[in-house]
Image (cartoon, rainbow, N blue to C red; front, side, top):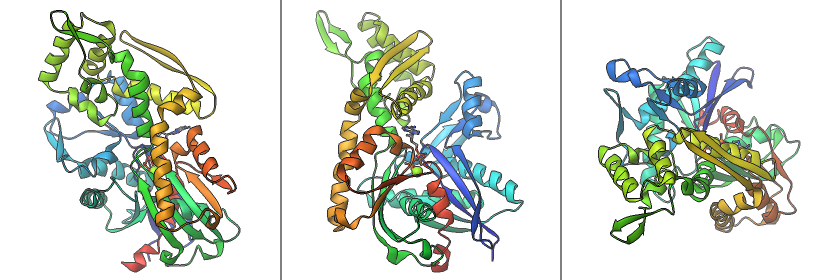
Length: 423
Ligand SMILES: Nc1ncnc2c1ncn2[C@@H]1O[C@H](COP(=O)(O)OP(=O)(O)OP(=O)(O)O)[C@@H](O)[C@H]1O
Ligand SMILES: [Mg+2]
């Protein structure tokens, strides 16, 4: 028998690893890192691929004046068949390569703690990597497995992320409960309806306890994208007119603004042609100062820092009624007071989609509200007040629990060792 196995939650925003001691049947440590990679600019001159991961990646990127390649939300490229590879210096890196760097970092940290090269891991995966497309889902799963192998694992199993979260919650309950678990992360919102029982958590095969799983491709990144569109893009020229022919004023192309609303889309601004286009529209907008902010944003790679300001506003609004969306960099100056009500309006469409999906999920699996003894909410996005409100409204008489928002999935994956018995 192995002494240890790892539960690994490779997340869109954060990744976590729980070290499980199989002999003692307990978790000995859980580590987390932001799912971020940074490749320094000097890479062009060297053959060796050098990179930093997690918090170090953020520090180096900022120290290097936000040059080089900075990557976040890498999990989102896993289901994308159009993403073959990305060039970094002289290297072509596939989606699996990028994920490997993050998993390897976690593995090395954990191996150092236990003093062993652990080969056995249970990886979490969202119920759906992408909505409604089985082939994309299969591709993402294959890429994640490849990354796990490249990182040095030999015995690999997969578990749905919300089931992981459920098993973590099971450690804290005293009696049998039928629980609806919602894991709201950076990229996806996942559900499972499951019977948990503190007496059964050492039982090997848990398949019969799991009644239903489902999910939707909406998470904190979607909220940030909506915020950027509604509140951010007017500062970068949305609404500004340009003179297309003498006396004829038109709106600037919308694609300039939709493409700054999510991290992956910012690549849109990389080529020379788009730079020329931006220059031309700037001239035709009579050097509009707001549109100039877009030129500054794209030229100086400021996307990450703008999204940090957006996230800060969101996090503040999780605990208060007011916040300020504040950003000051290279001549761009934003200082907007935002109240909870207007934030809720910005994310309303996404909240409605989550709500509608949940209704369908319950109907599809014939789950009545009265069948649910309790709810367990986890993941960073479960802290958003509008999200909590949604669940309170839908289940006014059901207890709602939470705990360990950023590590419950990894912990529960580590409790899923039974999966190896099925292999
Ligand atoms: N206090 C907070 N209030 C609101 N949102 C928060 C808070 N803290 C973190 N978040 C958001 O939670 C998300 C990250 O949560 P989490 O770490 O659970 O996601 P993940 O596991 O990386 O993503 P996924 O499970 O979708 O792959 C981010 O969108 C982040 O902005
Ligand atoms: Mg998660």
